[in-house]
Length: 219
Image 1 (cartoon, rainbow, N blue to C red):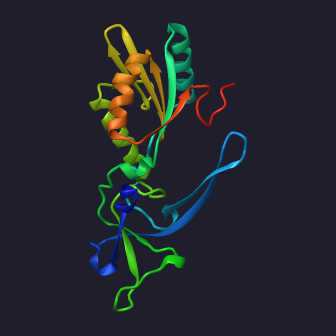
Image 2: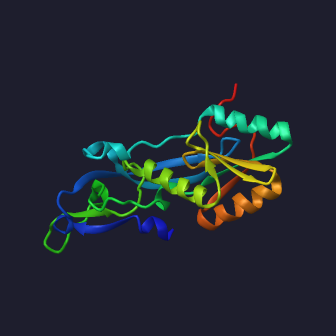
Image 3: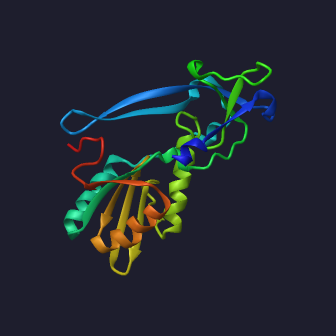
């Protein structure tokens, strides 16, 4: 996809502003399986190895995630008032977030190394929030939070990843765990105030009605 190709671009070290933060990079492979355990998709992801350089802005690293209590609360609320609860995730979420720091560079993986016409090693200028970058999770949280606020949601006082929208006597709530979103509310409100505006901004994969908080046991 075009957004992935736009996350990095080739550069020589002479092109980089000083000081530049230089990371290693790696290609990670993953086999996804369906519910019966059969292989369903092969994935390869070019990632920044965030352990290989000291990044001097630790205050930008932190990114909250929704608590299990919030997930359970939304399910209980949906059952109590007769609402529905949907689950979806944002595809390649980190790459959708801006990378405000212009001084981040990566080395090519050894098997993909490139050199310029003078034989000098080429590097990769990181222009988006690449997976593995220390700041990517915080950049994505800022991105999804900005969208939720602009869409009319208000952040909860008790959980920075719980967002609530009130329309008349109806309420729509979102619990956001990294790129997984649990949305609870009346069906018509879910479609008009969450699904349509969210699809206009992000590529979503719809997982269907919530059986349990994704990736977490509820007992």
